[in-house]
Length: 238
Length: 238
DNA sequence: GCCGCAAAGTTGGGGCTCCAAGTGTCCTCG
DNA sequence: CGAGGACACTTGGAGCCCCAACTTTGCGGC
Image 1 (cartoon, each protein chain N blue to C red):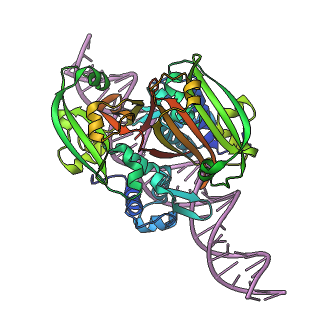
Image 2 (spheres, protein in one colour; image 1 turned 90 degrees about the horizontal axis):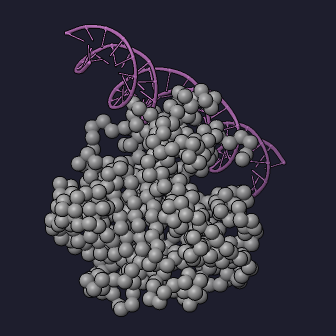
Image 3 (tube, chains in turn yellow, cyan, orange, brown; image 1 turned 30 degrees about the vertical axis):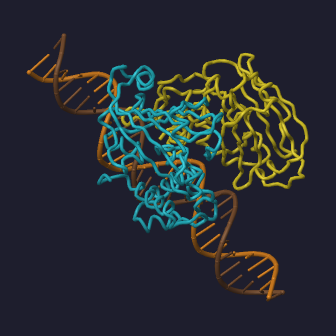
């Protein structure tokens, strides 16, 4: 977006795009260091750094003597993990990877922080925030609820802006550096049973997620998932 | 361990040790590139690479113009996340970060894979595996159960070996490249209620964890956590 | 005693080069 | 026709250098 980003990022973003949009399928060879320097008109350092970044993301894998290749099982790669974590419906991962569509409704309103949210965002209890309720559906069935709290000035207004909190914050000059989650299970509240169409006796997974910019929390949300019909999948390259 | 490891690893491991054992507390400055080259007698490239690796692990943070510093909140760093994930009791993280001791009992026995484990490890149903049952306790109270399945030849025999599956596999020449988890909640089985001292009506979190070496699964385990009294905490640098 | 500025130090981007170890290909020789 | 070896290519470790942007420190002057 900026006019003078690091050049290695140009290479990273171009290859990443080709992998995510399927131009480079799993197993496909990535151009070698020498080829990248010619193709993108960058130095060897930049080409090498780009490959290392992509390998660090788990999107490609390097084989000494042979080359870099798009990794198999990319649906479990950190990029995807990352995309889903950043997504307002982070635990819709397995549904999406099965090719099914996740849709959602939301509505926003101003709200007082209250003791719990004030603690999580390190704010005063009487601070007014934007509270957004989300209902996520997969193939029409309710999958997941989320309630997000963020300062008024950062709230999303369009569908597009809702897709990535990190990108939205970045546009405001705020760089998200960490995502902290705390998970437990509990009995659903009546409104939740209703919204999720839960049979009696089924518990829910409750995820408290907070986005941090350095040592300052900038957004927090409560995510509620039916505990029976759902699975969370992720992976990490070692 | 090996006689001729990459030199940057020497630097990484030394600094990492100092951070984890408290010699370098949160906020402490890390020697600069120039100082590292002198101190460890390595080139600038190696010093720089070591700092990048540590920063990538989230243990330190670089500030342009100032230096690298041990990160605050290191109990949420990826290294720790990683250590706990690799640990047989991955979700004892918040207890340990509060300084409490987690202890465990276990017993191993040979067992037939059976349909479920055979599918997860891509083996034949009649294959004999080592099955290990763990009971984890924090301050004497039961916290977590785990059942691990691994090929006979890789099984751990000492307490020390049990601490890190990744290190143990590495000693066998097997490099773990990925950890895949699938989580859901369910009603506890009678034996689980018993072992975890669960009040009636409390559900459990059931985690299916599989360690992969390339495209081959080498270990899988079922981890059962009480859903009421427990929280999972982790974080990821963006 | 305090302010402001310059100098020194630090990170992060980028460039170039050498080398060891491993892979793949192709050609030659038996 | 087939096996084996030479050669070209690739990764990953390592070294050295230059520079822009930023922070810290310390000194000189008011």
